[in-house]
Figure 1 (cartoon, helix red, strand yellow):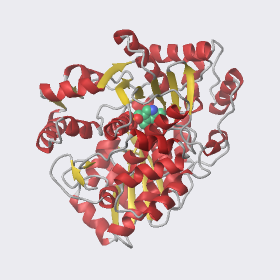
Figure 2: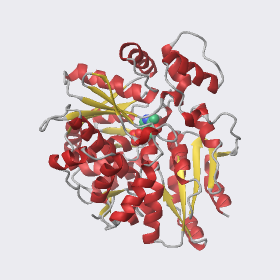
Figure 3: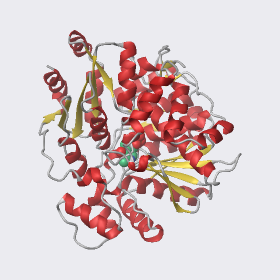
Length: 494
Ligand SMILES: *Cc1c(COP(=O)(O)O)cnc(C)c1O
């Protein structure tokens, strides 16, 4: 399996694509073809546990890793790190609607699914492509990636990690998770700005030749743990495969029938993984792309015009507060028939004007695969409340956005196909926003009292990783202007 860039023809191994994170031309690495997963193979996988399924999927993409290496990486990532050793269980909320719960890992959000595995993949990849070098991970986070990456990379030999987050753009619990992170190789820093500022700043550092050569002299090199890294995409494909297996096993997905997926979307990584699974042969029909009030994606899917020149809103689903959806670049490349010239031109327009328009045929292709919709703050709260009262299901704000848009889709189309909703965070991570949807009582100011109240109201346990934050020392107190990110990184590495 070879990898190329979305912006020019290249020929890379998966190890090179994973170590570099982003292509030298600024594009993203994509597989040159999609490996096939037949229904017979799915039946075989249905009898395996998550680790077995993950190994089989990874093997198809990471052909330059040995089977032993893949076995080591997957076992390391998914053994004793997720509740009951079941990383991605399905929970039926109503007949025909299944929640794919991706938040049973160490940081209580779906980013763990990929970021528990990425450090293993990256260290093996670096051993192949850059032996003896220290890998420096730079992360821009809208909240969940940061902590998940820190948890994955803390004290991993030959790695350093720097995480930037929007100082006022993440939930209290998300912030506390990050600024209390221990580890001799970690650094965490707030940015005066929003997520897009943090992401643009990181991209700028990555592509700055002077900084790269400074690192080179220190025998270091950058890599990315953001969802632009193919090493994050491939673990995400696994849970859609696994969901299909579980549906087959439960007798809910017969041979020849399909299911839809509904995904709360920000950077387009999670839903892109579903698209990849579909290309491989997983029987997925419609991909329902759900946005919050920052609805740049649902506008794009409706009109073909991507326009980031708009107001940025801070919402109760902060991990989706994004106006530049990085992984969409991969989707455009594929939808345009692997057209790197077109993709490069559109991405140039995006960076210069903040706007581009898709050719009509590419838009038609996207619209045949995706349904785009959005849900505002009131709709999010209403959906949390409804799911809890009618279905006895406690959803977080992000998951609620997807459930709401799914309902809109069903009303608009009459399509009642079995649907898997990506449930992306524990409701406890966003207790301050979830609680008002459940009760009229006053919400306590203190984050830990909020957890207690949520537990009492819902009769569910507080996840141990969140309860355990109580009393942890704050270790990272920096907050800097967005123009000072490069300086901050170099200071840390010295
Ligand atoms: C990151 C995140 C999302 C968005 O996922 P993308 O891959 O960026 O589209 C949704 N929900 C939660 C809880 C997240 O952390």
